[in-house]
Amino acid sequence: MTNADAPRPTPASGPAPASVPAPASGPATVPGPGPGPGPAPGGSGPAPGGPASVAARTSTTAAQAGPPPAPDPRDAPAIPPDPRDAPAIPPDLRAAAKRAPDHWLGMVDPAWSGEGPPPSWAVRGEWRTDAAGEIVEWRENEEYRASPSARGWPPPTDEVDEAVQLAVTGYGPAEEVTRRLAQAEVAVPVDPEGRPLLAATPDGIPVIPVHTSAAQVDALGRLAYEAVPVTLLLDLLEPEQRLLLNPGGAASLLLETDALRRAAAGERPAV
Image (cartoon, rainbow, N blue to C red):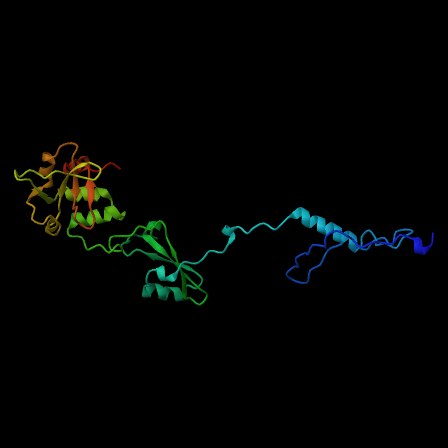
């Protein structure tokens, strides 16, 4: 057989080699198995480790791998809150930020006055400072309980109203309401016969509305009422009836009478 009759290599007819992403530090490279053992005996075709075999393996690998997975939206960087939704920064907090770069600074509700670090529910949120001590980000606290003053409520009208406001916002115990109310005199709206006026809550609970101060009585308008010591009022209530404290005030509280009777008798609440 002459050289003219020898078989000649034909170009690869498969798909073009898949592109390989370049590493961050340099141009793209395709790792190969190293130099081949040379031309096959009796022919001039490419070596087994040459470009044609590399292209075939690369295209096969690309076909098996398939398209790259879609990015997970949970991996996306968090969008910082809009600073326009944040509260005003107190001057003392801004001054503290200058002394604490790269920190989170808590903003405590002004009604908290306990000893030691405040509980999480008394912290409205946190401000983050950058390396220069500038406040750059606000983070809300989902456990925060706004106090009466933070809610914009008017000041309490009396000691019982103060205890009610603190109890309904989580800044005071409900036992303090019953303790103060048991020693108080309240205004009770009455019917034409002078009996306490019976009302009901939206879910059908029978209640006697009571008002703990003259300012609270203003909510009654022109309705008749009588001032009655709570200890006397308890004797007029039926077992299923409850007291509704200051229904027209900033904070109202539905109170069961059992706890109030124990407080009136001087019993301490169970721990």
